[in-house]
Length: 414
Image (cartoon, rainbow, N blue to C red; front, side, top):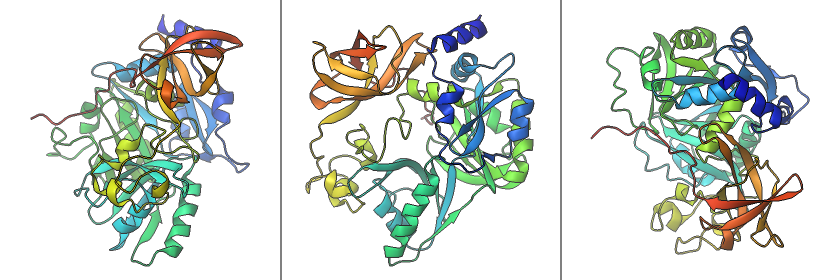
């Protein structure tokens, strides 16, 4: 029943997971890179598409495959989804001045991160626009950074330019394809990952957004971070490329773990109200416009008061308050048909265009269309009635808070 429903939704365009949509993410004429799991993806029925210069599965064919089934599996109690995210850029920063240098690049308070703790942060340009979003962890002897696959080479070009201007002890180690990266997401993620970890590893006390170097299935040189981009509990695990297939095979040998493609990854993050770089945030979008001002801390936080990162003067006032913005990222619901990116948003009269949708899909969990986009600041309050121009017709909708589906990030028991 679910499989046939998913097929119908795909045909009707209610879930945006076409090959064409993901092929658009390919950024050059260079040959596509294959991750260490390429042959395994094919063996499992992966429908491979170009994405961020790599060849990755948009979905899998089979009993538990297809975007709808893969999406719902990740939300089901006791189950977990395995994503190959090896296209993302893994970087280690070394040197006595690594923290000071990174704080020039990003908006977050990296200096205050205890060993093992991480945060989501934003890399900004001179105008205050977002070059990329990144997860940064204080790994003790080094700083571990993960950036988006589609932007990693542009990011590193920017980093190298800033290194040339920095007078201090810092070096960048890009791990290239030598380390592969998986995301294990869902309510059953901890039970699935536990089987790979050494005896005595305490997952119960491992908080969300913390990480450590470890062994996985007895293999040295691995790393685990409790984080993810689905709104569920989950982990990102990194391992040497030569051991990636054996670790992935052990994970999916567990009947609660389902291999999952890019299609479900996109619909899961949208239900969670999370941004996709290039759609919802870009170099012309500031953190405050994107409703990501919290990544800089509260009004009296050190980064808000001191600034010091590239573009800070275009985001912050001298007293740490945010500068005025003219538009803001919001959630949108209530329309009868899905609204894709670039769908125009109008005020309730239908006479004035006030914004544009940046991401939209049919929510498998809510069984209705959801979208996010930018509207004029005065129209950004939840409950504001708007009209969306979908396929040439105006449809009633309403600005809403996000996430669309309640997040279930892990909290350490008290």
